[in-house]
Length: 447
Image (cartoon, rainbow, N blue to C red):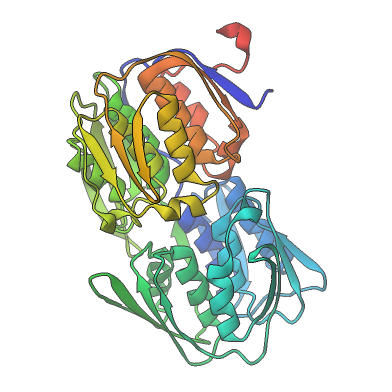
């Protein structure tokens, strides 16, 4: 089957109740922490995407066994530093920056040199942000000009650090937290606010980690060398995956949707806050707490009128993976939407800010860009009738998702490449679109 799709029709009105793919961030973290726990952890509803499957392969290469029984994964850990590391071990993180950066934190005591590699896209991403704190711990690490491949050799003489994380990167913060687990003493992180799944998961395991919240920064203290027991975890739905269905519903005529059991962690709901500022009326219902995380059903209805937004930069970290689809909503909004300080978008699977500008211009939207700031001139009457082709986006799954939602909500005749990119985070994406009534073809002659 070809690796591109054709979409030539808008989606018709729908009223659906769905469940999106499981949270990728929590899936990866649950595997990595299971590998450090004492005993057999049981993980339900694990996302079976390439990024998560590569995480399972990674811990297996480090001597941690797992098995799948009746859709549940059983992972047997041997406690902190319980890896059985062999000589000449290579870990392939594929396309996952989360896996690559976090697993380095668990290798700080490796007695043999370990090589970390990734695909073409991941190999272009900056790892200096984790290399610097790892070296402060005392770890020996070599890289290809701060990119993959990386070689890491642990040390018996780890020392706790005090570190200022001012990027707002959950991956950097989590790498340091995981490094501190095997480090004697108290590690302190003064971190700009970002996703906090690692902290919440450790707190749910009664691990001695404390978080003191401030306006912009949080002070995190972690006591090292404290063993924790195996655990059970039922992974909730991923709001980053839900985002595309939320905007599809908003932009489709006379449509509504309920997305069940989604993780609405406050560090992840910037998308909802921004869209509601634009005039959407997205609601959370059936809220509950689970292992420190907030879970809810999301209710969305289509809207006839979206207004431009002057997006507060304080929301950037909580919407960093969703700005592509937020920009599409801004393209249909009345007025000029303004976004600032979005340089972190270019540190993702592709240079997403650059590609977003290119994409918006492709669909006829005026965009002004000044370095990491952009203004989007919305057109509430935007309807597409021409031919559109989307390719050369470094197989970034979110660019593929964005293109599909644009085609289904705005019209036009689309050829979208790199269908297989969805395997990294949301393998059932196309299947779910079809269940909503979307017509998606693989062969040109079907047009």
